[in-house]
Length: 336
Image 1 (cartoon, helix red, strand yellow):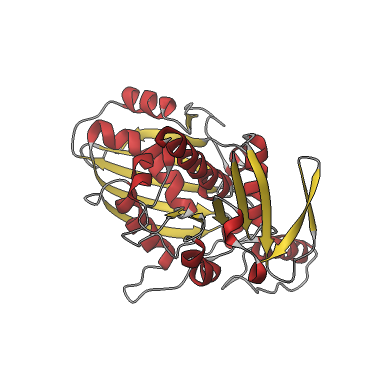
Image 2 (cartoon, rainbow, N blue to C red):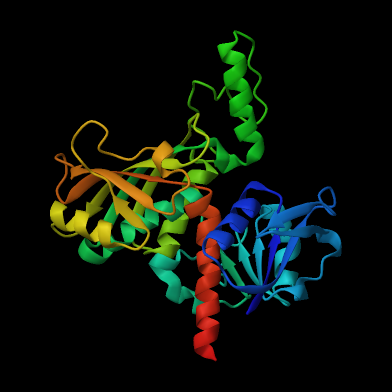
């Protein structure tokens, strides 16, 4: 069995990773929970046992065979490559995603790319990308996708715990008639939406939007054209996406529904009636990525519209990274 470590074990994604490991009943010999010196010495209960949190600055990366990095890009930049000499690194941050020597993996889409590891590091994609490519993959296999237009409706948990707390506090303040203060957002998020996630580039796109374009190409097909508008909404958990897809070949809506419903990790909820679709509330806590509102785009040949909803802390982070670990462990077993 494998020894596992989680860097950033006390954060949102680290704790969610623990939940997924428990839910999937991943077998391991030893578990090492690691965080900053501020959290070192704290105890985290897991499967009826208390684990002491190790100080990252003093931690020995040779303790584990597989190490999840769930502490952001700066920590990945500082520690991941040296750690990878001693342990296989699965990184949740954006730092290595576009590195040509680091595979960017959604196991249901491109698990075979695990074999292309050159730095002993695997990157986990952006949360909004992960759920998108799950839905695109079976359709690309059928009809070859030419172009994608996506508008996201992203929950505040994509920014971490502090933005979640701020949404709750702003909502209380607003409802009580008090002034609202924004610390983690460029504008008020309670009862509002903000068409801005991450920093702006010179061409007017934000880094989040460019991530979706570049990561989709790397994961799925470099020939796919994709343009995105990423929006933060006052929802705690789960990202939603409105997606327009143009195929190179004629399609069948019936075949599209069947392919998506049969795709690993996807579930179609698409009744043309009130409530016959998925929303963030239903997706939260579920491993599935839900696809709804599947319909023809009557303005353009070989094009459709659909709606995608998924728990970003699971599919876009913890669940996907644990599934990467399962893929690595399976590959190691087969190699033996």
